[in-house]
Each structure stands twice: as structure tokens, then as C-alpha cells.
Image (tube, rainbow, N blue to C red):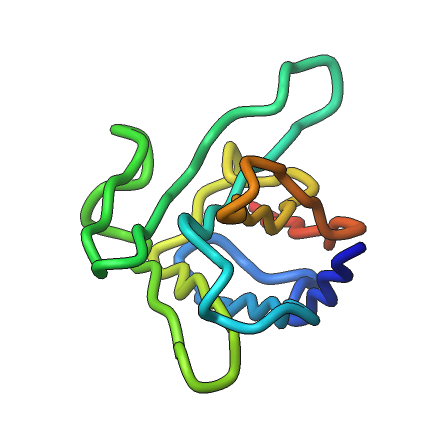
Length: 116
């Protein structure tokens, strides 16, 4: 069983920045993709950014150019740098990983609130 511990959420004004981090209890050797999702009240959970084992990244159109996903393989950590934040970025953000045994694990979620 894997555990994912997230940190870095909070309240920020429009145009501000936040950095989310997530550390997995598994070795990087068994982790394939590492992702960030978010869910706003009344909305479905959506994929925000993903980074593969090889380091390739992909972003939702709504965050391209503003968010950057990165991973520290030595620490099984994935981060999400969020710049130029907008009110519509307000959501609970979830870290997620996929493993070599085809299972997905989720963090507990961290609240990001962007005030106008």
C-alpha cells in the first residue's frame, strides 16, 4: 500500500503563485506516471498535469504556460508550480501516481483558493 503526502496548498490572491509538493512512500523504481488532478465544487475531477517516468510532461489547456510539473526521482516527489493563478483555479488538488503493477494511488488532497 502506498501513501502520498501533499503539501503547499493555501489562499492566494489573483495573479499569485503557489507550489504544491507530493511525496510517495514507494521507490521511484516502481512509479510510472505522476500526476496532479483537481476538483472544484460541483465539478468532476480533472487532470491538470502529468509527468512520465521519462520526464515527458502534459498539461490541461487551461493551465498551459502557467503551471509547471516536475519530479525529484531521488525522493519520489512530484511538484506543481502554479503561477498567474486565477479564481477558476480554486479547487482541491490531488496528487496521483501509477505503478508498475498497474495500480493508481491518490493523495488526500490539498485546498487551493484564489481570491479576487
